Image (cartoon, rainbow, N blue to C red):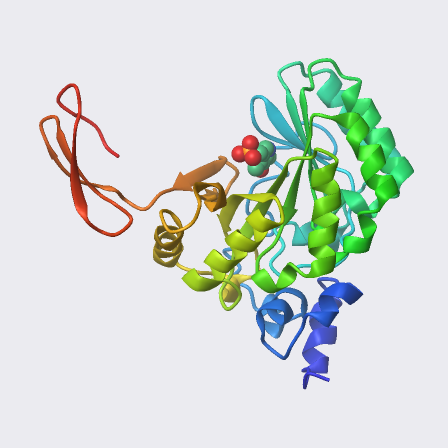
Amino acid sequence: MFNLDEEAVHRVASVFPLRISPEYRKLIGGKGDPIYLQCVPDGRELQGNEALLDDPLGEEEHSPAPNVVQRYPDRCLLLVSNECATYCRFCTRKRKFRSGLCVDREHVFAGIDFIRRTPAIRDVLISGGDPFLLDDGRLEEILRELRGIEHVEILRIGTRTPCMLPERITVKLVKMLRKYHPLYLSCHFNHPDELTPKVVGALGRLADAGIPLGCQTVLLKGVNDDVSIMRKLMRKLLLARVRPYYIFQCDLVYGTEHFRVPLRKGLEIMKGIQGYLSGLAVPHYAIDMPGGSGKVLLLPRALRNVDGARLTFENFRSELHDYVDIEEFKGDL
Ligand SMILES: *Cc1c(COP(=O)(O)O)cnc(C)c1O
């Protein structure tokens, strides 16, 4: 069909599972295109650099309870599903799909119990796998339990189903979700072609339920390592009422080296977005640090010179302009 290297696909898929949703499959235009690259197994996934660990973010070490990852004092991840509608070939949690993340009710509830016993946690990010691959009843049980914890203020769901399985965003699901506000949703889009009319419809149903929508994007070679593609993606997201939130440097996961993009390129893309697009369309550019020390934000350098209180900045058009501070400036920007 696409002149697939079937032997390589089978070999890779026996280690890292293959699943492509019908809607996403329809978007593949040809071998090696940005949609294909994200979902079709590639022989290079098994030729990883051994230095890139299976668990690059040290999630296992930062797990204080089953299915919980905590790196920040006031918020944590709760992993509730080990399935996705499509398996992204660059997934950070590939190891989980290989060794099997235990997401039965008992494990998830042990995680919820930890959150209940930890009053510092105000914000819970429900993730997986994809939480929307649970049926409405199981998902609601989790939301109800978490909502019942007094110190939990914010609930967030991280899901790629609006992109991969827009038909999952049913009127019934949305009606259930809106009972658990303040509920935020982080979706995941990497290419403007992913925002089909059906997908935009699904996002609209969520937005109409008052659920603020954010987007996480992963910077991927051959997919979106290009200023004009990223600009188009950010504009299309904003039109679909999704606020771009993060562009992530691809995590250093075993067998995903062929997706890596140098930081120089990421900064160049940020420079091509900021100032040229509505501020609402400008995400943070971040590295989730190897080892699990949290996210670090990267900004194109703006400060060009310091002369006492007089600072010279470079604007988005690469022109230099002065700003005078109220005292001599010491520090770094
Ligand atoms: C990314 C992440 C969060 C959320 O970080 P925000 O910057 O608040 O979106 C929380 N916990 C873990 C473990 C994370 O990796």
